[in-house]
Image (cartoon, rainbow, N blue to C red; front, side, top):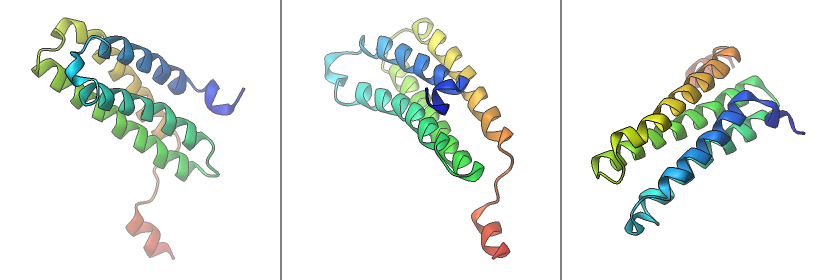
Length: 128
């Protein structure tokens, strides 16, 4: 078993993907290569960034990849807003995924914070 497979956020992100795929399969066929694909790729990106960050040589690098994972999560939120607005699914059908996703978001943020505050690029340049 690899280090990343033991991470709680990794397991939660896999569960999130399962839920995303379950819901996105209900989208109209016309969204197969657009919104459905975008939502599924963003959800997948969360897991992949957690994975890639866990193989980093430093906390700073892992911190950076967790930032990418958070951005991908936010992208899924925007996709779900579009889904709701287009009425592809009802609000109550999306609620469980939104709630679960928020829990994942909180865990990702906490994990990122646990790595400590990473210096900004301008701070790094000043230190050199």
